[in-house]
Length: 75
Image (cartoon, rainbow, N blue to C red; front, side):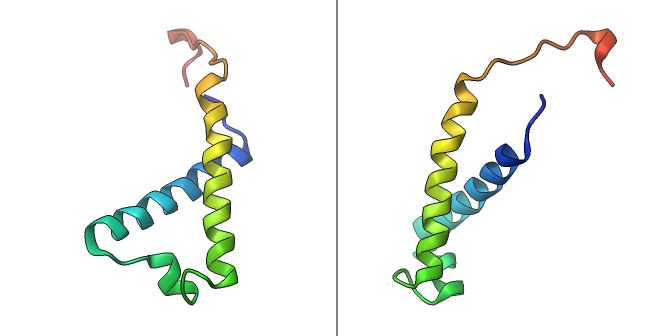
């Protein structure tokens, strides 16, 4: 599968967001808020917004055409 740079950045941000939500759910500890000065801090809000935009972007991954790779084309 050929992924462009925006797809990769979006997936990385979603992984960060997922790990953060996991730590909130399991430990009641918000890593992003801890790193950047609380949930209401400007940088924390930017990170939360980027994760949300990444999730919206990744919805498109569900509906994209995938190229078929035959055995002869595999590297």
